[in-house]
Structures are given as C-alpha cells and as structure tokens.
Amino acid sequence: MKAAQIKKYSKDINVLINEVPKPMIQENEILIKVKVAAVNPLELLNITGSVKLIQDYQKPFTLGNELSGVITEVGSNVKNFKKGDSVYTRLPIEKIGAFAEFVAVNQDAVWFLPKNLDYTSAAAIPLTGLTAYQAFTDILKVESGQSVFIPGGSGSFGQMAVPIAKYLGLNVIVSGNSASKNRILKAGADQYLDYKKENYWEVLDKVDYVVDTLGGAEIEKELTIIKPGGKLLSLIAGPNKQFAIEQHLPKWKQWLFGLAGRKLDSQAKKHNVDYRFIFVKSNGEQLHKITEIVEKENIIPAIDPNIFTLEQVNEAISLVKNGRLHGKVVIKFD
Image (cartoon, rainbow, N blue to C red; front, side, top):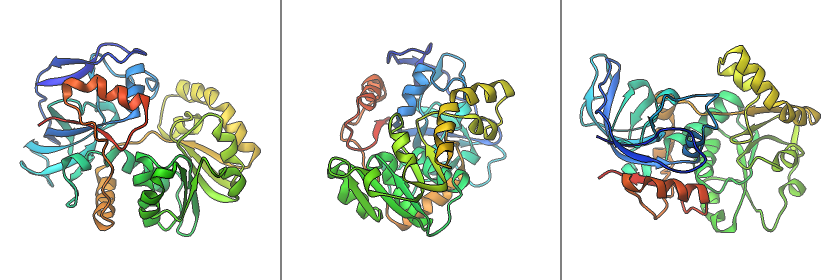
C-alpha cells in the first residue's frame, strides 16, 4: 500500500510516498481503509521533530493524525465494531499514520461516523474535537456557568470548541476575523470580538479560563483578563513541568520541561493563574460523546476547497503551514 512518510526530522517539507506492507492487526485492533485524512499543524511538528521529547518516532514513519474510513477487518477481541462500519479516529500518539491507504488501530481509539456527516467533513472532527473536550473536561475541569475566552478562535479549533463549550454550559467569548463572526456566533458563542476593531484585553475582565491558540506575546495579555485562581491553557505556547507529570514522563523530561516552561509558569504566577498545556490523546469513549454533540447540534465543520490526493501531500502540508485557510485541509483517497 502507499503511505506518506519522512526519513528524518527536518525543517523542510519533504514527504515521500512509499510502498509499505499493509498492516497486520492485533486481537484488539481494527483495520481501516482510509477514505479521508485531515492535515493539521501537528504534522509540521512531527516533521520537524518539535514534539520528539513527547513522542519520538522510529524512522521512517507515516504521517497523519486523524481520519475517516471503512473497517475491512476486525481482531478477535473487538466487540463493538464489524467489517463495513464507517468510523473515524484521532490515532494514538504513539501510533500515528493516517496518510496511508490502510491503518490498524486499537478499538478504544475509534467511534462511528456521525450520522449527519460524510467522510470528508467527519475527518475534520477528531483532533480538534478531542482537544476541546479534553481541555474543558480533563484539564480545566469546567463547571456550568463559568466563562471561557478563546482568542483566535475563529479557525478549525473554534468551530469545534465553541459548541462543545456551550454543551458544557460555559459562557463563550471568541476573538477572530470579521469574516468568521456570523459562523462562530451561529455555533453558539455568546460574544464575538473582531480583533481589528477591539482589543480583548481592554474589553474583557475576570474570565474563568482562556484557551490560547496564539501563543507568543499574547500570553501576557491573556493573563491580565483571567480572574485570580483561573487557568490559562495553551495549545501551542509550550509544555511545563505539570504537563510532564500528568503525561507520566520520566524524571529527566519533567526537569527539562520544567526548565522550558519556567517563564510561562512565572508569568502565570504573577497573576495568580494556573498555566497548563495540552497534547491531545486518542479516546474513543470521548469521541462517542463528541459524536453525540455533533449530531445533536448538527455541527458541520468547514473544509478548505483545496482538496488533495496522497501524492499531493507536500502541497497540502505547505498550505497548512502558510495559513489563510477556509477550513480543514484534507487528503482524499478515493
């Protein structure tokens, strides 16, 4: 079968299409014929090796973190799935590889395709959906009636995070571009700030949580609007010691991440705020809950009109790197 792989970590996007053996499944695994795989900024981190301290891969390895497809084989211990089922998944961190014609994955990482979505739209759900769900429930441990601000939340993360946050009973505030305002408000946001017209740090005050999608210089501004005892969770600013502890990483990595995240922890401490970082995990049970929300709220994620084939994987990743997207970038296999 064909798979998109890299031989070594590099700053350059140089993904190769290789012929590799079709996966053999274990007793708890299913074999999925991939219909659509989504392309994310995480692919760039995997290519450069930026996350190798969290997960280092034996090379060459196949890229791709989320997909939709059809089950063609099931292991002897698989209970809930059968051949022919349409499913989707965020692949386990230690066993990615969505940019391939077939993928073997543990049944615990998979759920059935939402009834209101086709394969293309569904492929855009797992990574951002699980990121949002785990951010709110596992890390922030939000309660109904609390407030969350998502700066830069008009993109693919926001289109999933907003309805999930509303489902959990949060008051949701988003900043972003003017073109996305109506779409994000329709998704359930209570307040939308056009970043070109309003500075959120001058408008907002005492929110319970901020989910940072911007990083960099925005961190200090975000901290100023969080109430004492609140939490700032970043998707990109970087891990700290608390993250390493929660990931059960070895002591030397806890020390290293503690050193790397010391500035962020210090900034947060000055405002009596708890800083957290997230690296989303596969979880079929949580994906089941997300599927219920997607179906109930009829969430249909935006897909970028530039649809790619596997042979065009370098162009797809380059598009994600350069930004200015109009939805999730996807690779179609049929």
